[in-house]
Image 1 (cartoon, helix red, strand yellow):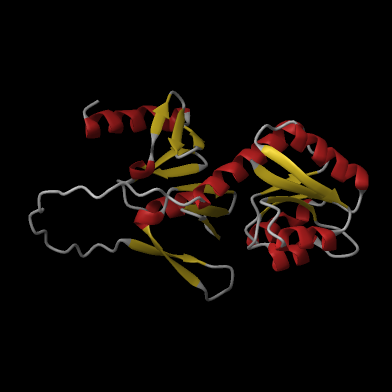
Image 2 (image 1 turned 90 degrees about the horizontal axis):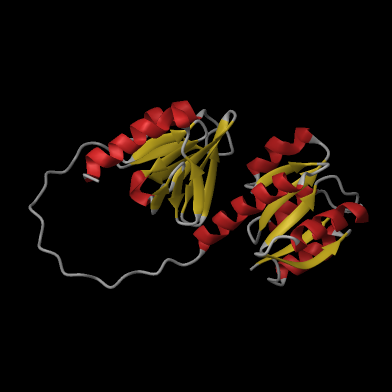
Length: 250
C-alpha cells in the first residue's frame, strides 16, 4: 500500500483528493489537511509515501514544502495555475495535476508514482552461479556512460548506460529513470536518442525510449520494465518486434 496525504488550503479540494484516494486499491489515506505545516510533521515522522500537494497556500507554498520534504517522499502537485509546472518538475515531482482534476488523470498520475516507488524497493540478488571464464576481450574505446545537464547552468551529471531503465519525453525535457532515481534534463527525446547506443536502447513510442536489457515482458502493445507499463507505439511496433525476433530467434 502507498500511504498518502492530501494537502490543500481549501478543504473541499482536499476532500476531492481524499475521495479519489479511497477509490484506488493500492492507495491508503493517512490524512488530509489544510495546513502544510501539519503535513510536514507527518512526512518527517515517516508516515507518508506520497503527497498530493497544492502550490498556492498562504501558510507555506508548495515549492517551499518541496524544498523541505521533497527528498523524503514522492509528490504530485495539484493546482489551478499551469505556469508552476516547470518549476515543480525541477524539484523532481511525480506529476502535475491541473484543477479541476478528472479521475482518469488522477489515476494515471498515481500509477506513475507506484512505478517510481517500486523502483526504490531493494533488489533481491540471485545466488552467484559459477560460470566458465570468458575469453579475454580487448578494452573498448567507446564510453559506457553519458553526461546530462543538471538543474543549474554549469552542472552536469554522469549517468552509466547500464543504470538507465527507460526514458520518458516531456515536451522540451526528458526524465531518465534509474533504479530508485529519476533525473530530469532539458533536451528533446530525439536529441537524447542520438546519444544513446543502439542496442540496448530502442525508441518504442513517441514519448519513450527503453533499454531492451531491462525489459521483463512484451505483451501486445505494452512493454514491461518491472511493474512499469510502457506503450508500444504503432509507428515503432513492427521494427521493434522484428528486432526482438531476429536478435533472440523467437
